[in-house]
Structure formats: structure tokens, C-alpha cells
Image 1: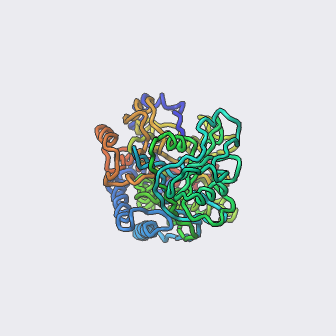
Image 2: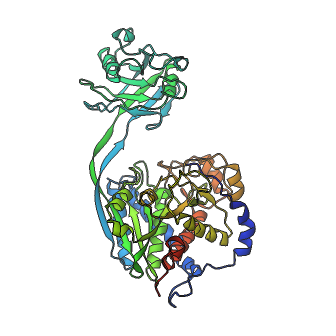
Image 3: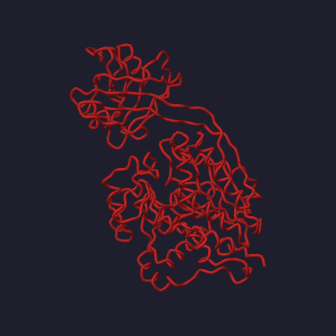
Length: 518
């Protein structure tokens, strides 16, 4: 997601100096045994939050290197959250649901003369023919079958590559055939290549300007296909075809079935159950790694907030959620919210989302509840969300910290709540988008480098394994990092999360007009 600096950021430095000593206190009617925001911040320690993150890393290490829904590492993560909540006096609910599980392990590589690995999902995808997708691996010399690399200057659907047996004349058995989209069906092209002796097929897109350059799912009747076949961007095909003597490896490998995963929910003992403050974070990782910043950081900070807040005499009940299968398409939250009866949805005053709060090259992003950045369509953001954003901004300002707007795009679990017209807000320290020069002036760090260089990668861990040494050495020169966690950002954000949750646990009237009970 593209993050745009908020119009209020310029005033933060000067306002923050004046406000740094101020305290955001609880409403006057709060009972004597409640705590102020400052006291809550003392209870939520970096050491405790890092302890939870370390536990999630250990779980990943013990369960095949990830904590993805559909894998044992997620189940162990779920159990850890439940055990911690029970120890803190909660009676957590574990909500099971089924989902369509996919694990894509397909690969496309140019082995020689210069090795290069293409990215599955963005540069190529496997076929999904109606008659089945053969799993297999093949390596061989590349054979371009009448491909047209000047196609961008031609009208659509002009290539006949692979449509006729003659296109494969001279191809050695065991080659990897490169054919091009156009004229006849994908199934015709790959079956013709197989009949001519190809061990694997790469179908490249046709390449007209502004269209036909991306990825297209290959479907249809390919009865009899037994070799691996993938579809690639036009640029990938050009790369291969323009490499003299290229040797190519194609592998189609995946798992697709129905599995069970879980949400974990827990409610505070005290507070008005008809005016519920919800706060959530997704617990699952991607398949490729431990998911320590994404989203062990949000899950851990939320867990420690839950542990500490359950001791307080709250005015509004707080419901915490750790979502399953977010990385599979926001499935946990999208299972939970629509399944609630309308009367129960109406009891939710607001939802707070914490997805990635310790990015190594961080910025402090606040979901743009007032749409000051103009990135959300009309009527997309529920009323009350601007007031949630205001509270986050006020707390950062009092800590003399800068902040940016983070666009409300529906990219994380708050999407299900705003779709149900529930006000929402939250934090985000950045993913794959590059940090700007302006943000470097605000936060330090590296310009033109992603907020999280290990986003969705194996190196999103606590050990530092797999990191780009040059990038992370430069980041460590400015920040305190533990693996892929920026502990400075995490320390601040853990306090901000506790502060905002506690603020609304006492009073949501600015968001939904409901006054706290006396």
C-alpha cells in the first residue's frame, strides 16, 4: 500500500515538545482502582512483548519453519495465546472454521548462462486446467517456438506460437518449450509442445502496451497433459528468449485441499457488554517463514495489552481477537463478522487492528479514518473512524513522535468490520513499499528501501537468517534490531496500543455517542 504523509505531521515536532509532559488520563468518572495511561504503559513492557515474540519464533522452529494456517505451527501458536489468556484470567473462545488451503511451491528458473529465479505469483503462475494440473519438474534447453518479441507494436491476439506442430520443428526432445499467448487456446499450445517432445512448457503473455503483459490463468480441457506448464509475464518470456543457450527449470508443485483453522477470542471480565471495544491482530504467518514482524509483532503487543488490561475496572468490555488465515485472504475476520447476528454487531462500538507494528525500516502509520489523503472511495470509511484516528494522533503527539496517514484500503482484518459499517482504526509500520526521503527525515532509516525488506519472506524472523546483510547492517547502525524486529518501534507501539485500547475501554462517546456507565 502507498502511504501518504498526513497534513498534520509538520506540526508534530513543535506540538510534541509542548505536549510531551501531558498525560492522557481516563475520564473523571473512572473508579479509583483504574490506572492512567502512563501507568498502563509501565505495565506493558518491551521485555514482556519480546517474550511473546520469542515464543512464536520457537514455535516456528519446532514446526517446520512457519506458523501458517493449515500447519501445526499455527495450532501451536493458537495454544500459546490460549494458555497466556487463561493465565491472565480470561475464558478464551477458540472458533474453528474451514478454508480452502493452498500452498504454492511452483518454480521457474533460468539456470544458465546466468542463474535467475523468477517470482511465483507475480512473474509466473502454474496452469489450472479444468482437467487437472500435472505436478512435475523438468530441466532442459530453452526452445522458443515462433515467439514474437516485437509483439508490443502489433494488435491483440496476433501470435500463433505453438498453435501448429510445425512451430516445434528442430526442437530436441526434453527441451523446455517457450510459446506465446494468442490465436489458439492455451491447452492446444501445451499439448502440441508435449507431443513434439517438450519436457516442460512456459507460456508467455503476448505483450501489447498497457494490456496482455501480466498473468492469466490457463484453464480449459488439457486432457492428456503430463508435463509441467506455467504462464509467465511477457517480460519473463523476453528474458528467456533473449538469453542465448538458456537452460531452464520448470517445476509445478502445490497442495490444494480443505483444512481447519481457528480464531481466538477473549473478553475482559469487566465493562459494559453492550458497548464492546474490539481489538485484533492476525496470528498466522505466510508459508515461507516465521512471520515475526508480520504478524508476531501485532499479536504479541495485543496479547500483553490483554494480559494487563484484564486487571482494570473498565467501563466498556474489551474483546480481543487473534485471527486465523489472514494470509489466505483475510478469512478469519471475514468468517467472524458476517456470522455475528446484527444485534451482536450493533454492540461493537469500534474495531482496532494491529498488523505489523515493528517493521525494521519503520514509519508510524495510522489508518486514515478521516480520508485526508483521499485514497478511499466515497462512503467507504464508517462514521467514527476519524475520531479513532484522532486518538492515535493525540497519543503519538504526546510522546513527541511523528506519524503518517496509512490508507484505508481494506488490506487487513479491519476490512470485514468497515464492510459492516463498524468504525475502525489501527496501526501499521509498513510492508513492501519503499520509505521516502521525507520519511527518513522524520524517522531515520533508509530511503528507497522497503519498510520491511523481509516482508512475506523467510528472513522475517528473530535470528537474522536470510537477511540482506548490507541493508540490515545499515539499519542496525541507526536502530536497535533483533532479527527483523525494530525494538524501538515496537516499544513505542506497544505503549500506543495499550493506551488506545484503554482509552476506549473507558469511553467511546466520541466515536459512537455512548456515554460510559457510572
